[in-house]
Image (cartoon, rainbow, N blue to C red; front, top):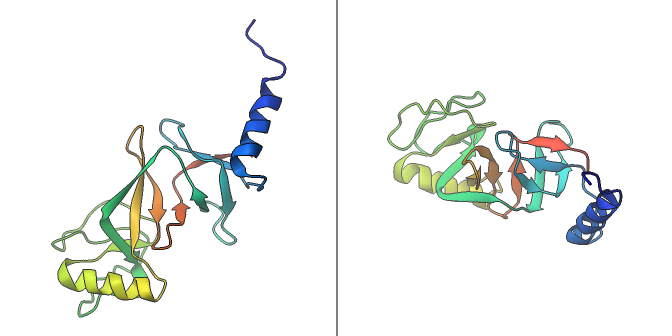
Length: 156
């Protein structure tokens, strides 16, 4: 038999139990391999393609990356692009990778600016990748809240 009539109800009961009774706006999956990255998230109020979550699964956080918002500026440097993506990597070379409104700090000045931005609640952010296929799916802030922007949402 290929169809289990009670499977949907059992799956819903498991999801409700895993969420601890909280309601979720969506179940988010990696866009490349469809691995689930969270079952408990909130949709961003203004940006309808962005989500935030505290409880995640099947992701890897790159703690060596220290991204900051483009508008925050780097102490002593004026290399902000002011656009979505196209930030600069270590050494000041153009990255070509696109992040949702993020760029990277450079050298010691970037680390100092990232620390100042963290104190002001503006970062740093660490890149978050799908653990299965290594696709960039979002960022994690200093408060360990995950912000997903490259994911596939489905109804919770």
